[in-house]
Length: 266
Image 1 (tube, rainbow, N blue to C red):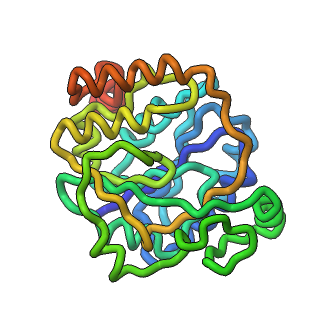
Image 2 (tube, rainbow, N blue to C red; image 1 turned 30 degrees about the horizontal axis):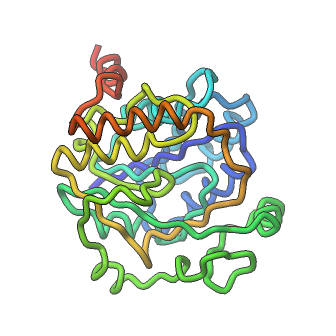
């Protein structure tokens, strides 16, 4: 099963470098790494090119113009360009455990998507990691806020990974799904601009299409570097869009990934 890893980023190449380092040192590497860039400055493109030249798998940079926070569009462009039948998406401030991709692939099941957890890294420990280029993840590491989330117990993860339709705790910083399921619901809804809820609305449409959620703990481990919270002025409108998807039991969004797929086929 071919697997594409999509890493979203915006103007934080120092964190992206740790994410790329960890992505390219996997025990079972992805078949490609796609950097979904929401309009970063040229230093991000330079970083990606540097890693592309030495990477053991293809590294692709998919950039869009900086018109504000447009994570939905950025992910759609990357997923449209992906060659893998299975897609893992993370944020560019996530450092991946060396078995991260192996775990996602091992736990993948048809008609489900995976919601992974995250290990929170403190502000001070984040600064230290950025300086030292430390990509190690251990429950005994310095600056780890939720140490239980750093435990890798594959046998237990398989037992606990049951299906659910709950929305609580949906985060696209550690998620995976079959590409065909994503395309069926037309990907992420690009009516969402500004931070918040585009991942939950995507999950609603996946659930409405019959693709259930599976929470994964003690596997597919990733550490989330500290950063200041994003501005939340778009939340009222994004909450409204989310509620519409729930109330109307939507499966597809009109403003999604299909436009990029059509360009590829033209």
